[in-house]
Length: 409
Image 1 (cartoon, rainbow, N blue to C red):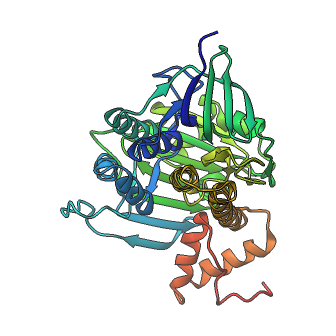
Image 2: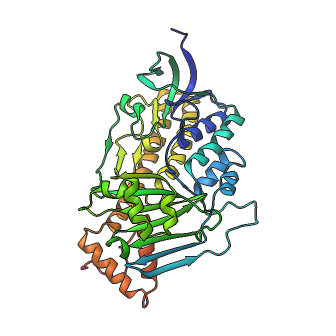
Image 3: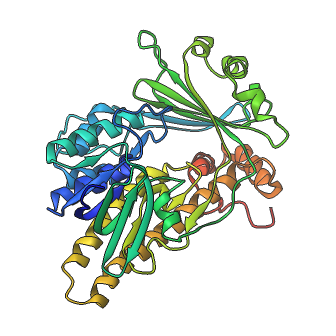
């Protein structure tokens, strides 16, 4: 066996969250490696995370000058969002021109394929000199008082002071550290379809949400544009057989009911989900040598784009905490630095779970109280326009119910 390799921090997982962690460590001069189970250049299906909030762009720009602007320039911003209830428009907002000529100001969001997001962050990593270990699935962690020994499935051993687990929903790091995910799984099945845009005759850039689309038997449908394509979200009913809707032939039957029929021949990805609403019972281990970030730490329904946009601050605060811990003058001070980060990000994860759970309740068709509130709100929009905004915010997790509709409903 080859001699054990050493560094201060091992980042496990080279998705966008792991790439951000590796980049931040390199920028701070902390010796590290980003370890990925899959080989370099692996193909990953689907658009997955497509939306970066302004706050995330700012964090990325602070981490590596120019990165936030690069992502913003290569994504799109939709200038219009609209919401319909049973075919009736209840809310529309036009943000105006989106080609902001002020190059010193980041936009309020950008939308592009996750592969593209990863590409631009990876290019920044390479330029910064981040070390990668591809095709290196983790087999075992031995967590000791003064560090961690990581063994890959090929038998290679690494020794580090800390590990940042960014290895996703099936995190080996989380499992090896004895950390558990806690929370429910939804009963509703959601179908996600990616379609490629017709560049010669594209649709208007509008985010459109339908409550109970009249052509889809009352099922909710959302259209979200991203650079080069569209994501179509369909919420199935409890009585639906997901397989009838999710095969390519199944999608080709229902998609022309809600989009131009040409998009039935432009499908690039179909996936079904029953969303987990879970958060790790701790984002660190008993010895304070592990920190979890991104989907290794939490899984939410995607309403409000809470996954990647919370994973980035998870990673950056993990790096900040480790930087403080490395400089600590005592064991108590070191452990406290890790604890503070783990506790802060767990609070954030619980808040995000609450928000996405509120969105689920708002959207689900089997909640009589919410059905009544939605129905009343839609009927009163012409009299009380702000109820339209409440309906529009539903897919993102409204913080409060409409004030005009009392709790008796």
